[in-house]
Amino acid sequence: MEVLSALRYWKYVAVMLLVMAAVTYYNVHVDGLIKDAVGKAVMERDGQWREQEAAAIAKAKADATAQEAAQRASLEAKNKDLERRLKDAKTIHDRDVANARAGNLKLRFSTTLCTGPSNVPGAAGPRPEAPATTIDLPPEITANLYSLADSADEVEEQLQGCWDKIESYVHPPMKGTP
Image (cartoon, rainbow, N blue to C red):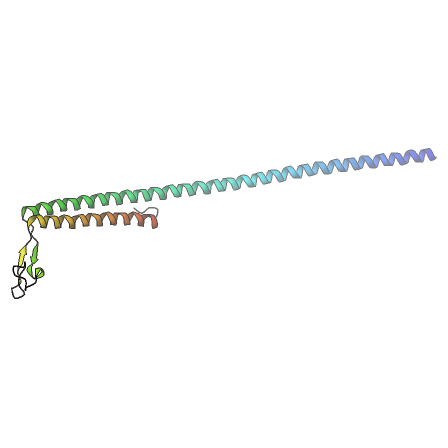
């Protein structure tokens, strides 16, 4: 009977080994299925996240392009306005200088501003006891003064144009505004 019980013993051991192999196979198979399912879920979640991120990036690019277009349009409008103002200033300048040279525009000058020392014989200018009078400046001097004033106006217009451009960078126009 010993042989029979030894055979039974080995039979039980073999059955136990087969059960353990089956359980191990089952666990490995189930772990593989779980890993596959988790991998698919992660890929699906990552795919959705990537789609959301791609949509957000596309929206940000579209907003930036619209903002850039609005700023470019604003700068173009400011440039056209500056060119118009400079052209108008040049027209006024040319007209003023031509009128001054022709003697149509006259600047008056008070002689009280030209007082010279009264104790020097033959000194230029009226004496303090002389009545205040005004005289016309010569046309060439008048034209030069108008030219200087108009040049200053042109510089002022250019400065205003620069300031407008700086303002458009510091405070860019919002979407939908010119």
